[in-house]
Image (cartoon, rainbow, N blue to C red; front, side):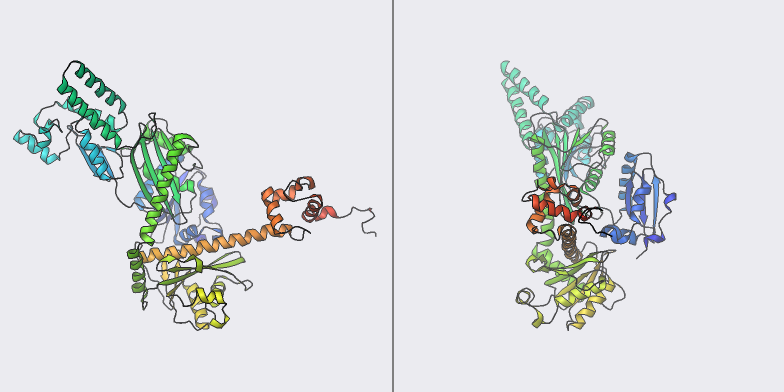
Length: 631
């Protein structure tokens, strides 16, 4: 573990310009990439007191051994360079995306003399125009089958196309009028190019004009009594209509927007994207990203936008980008997206109307994406069994740990120290067995706190109460400590003291996600993609979340309740009511007696008593007053 102070740059050496920075480890590998409007201000924040840093940030700065940066002209250049470096270095402390699958696109090879339409995945080739992504391959294949009846562009592979030209005979699609057969010269390159452009225009949202044109031609043919032509145009109109039915109608107007919605928990964020063109959903996708960075919802949305518009040839920004949550600073993103589109792009969060309703649908899909991803990894019986089996093999346990308990300690400068104990059975949380501990030892450090919790959890059976006997009738198959080797040794010593020395105990360190085992000099390194590591991370993070929530609750209760302690006639319910009314302790202290009476349930006498307690100096009698002390 590196001390960040050993590689901290002198504050005067860091410029105040916008830029992008890289943290590197001892082997010069990039472990984190970030951008900043003011490099000096942002980098200095990483070298504050490590105890006050977010656990993810603390793990990053203690894993790094150096930091460097590049100054750029503005924030738009900064975000472009940042994402370029993230793709290049793949830093392990940056956001990790977990696509459950590759999504199908409808691709048109517009760079060729006779472009071809095909369903592909992972759109990346230059000189190709992409439409989508689509949620299901069958939907886009069916759409393409309908459209080639109206726009008969080729769908054959290049080898088939060349062979047909050599023999002078088209393939089957040319005979059944699903291809204009440019391979044998049935259509000129100019007319074929026009056909391809019409196809691309229809797919990009300009569908109403084509439908009206076909309807008009059909009526004209019928009036001329050319019924065979009218029937053929009727079939084309039906094909266009069926193709449009594959794309959900969203708006009556020609709305052009990308809808991005997110749903999140403590560990992951589910993302749902709808591409709306011409008032219809032309493509959609959902994916999950792991929260590897200390970012706000706005920060993670920025990461999503970076990835979404990584290749403007694949995903050109729409006129509007609708987000489920606003960005903290949208200016640079508007400039960047506008430069990609070549026209003005608006970023906003819809508040009402049809767009708000569509955003609610997208958010629901994002929640479902996150729920399904979590369920597949944590609720599937096969996956859970695999994780427990991997833990047994990696830790040399006598049997799979069907019950796992995890302990985490939370404190702030030694005050209000608390701990949580969470329980997982068969790989699933058993919340009714969770326990919270208030550390009783005065001035206990992290190791002493771990030892106290372990001792209290595994105390002698006769010392337990009846409820504990029901919930903890048998020991766990594995005890996990949130920490490294020192915490594991403290837990092991406490287990030995209570006669439970044979209980398996390990520590999961956040720095490199190493698994520490008692009396071992080196940690056990589980593969980053293993189900066993994912289960341990989930248990550890659940314990951390529970401990943090308890610590904040106790700290907040102490900070607010102590202000009104000693007020005669003021109980807990009225204390909460008056604090809720004023919103903060500062506002409460600034209130006059008349303003205090405006709070619910506070009369003149009680308001005066509260004011006297909050302003004790004001109640002293002035000099010379009959009640003042006389010399």
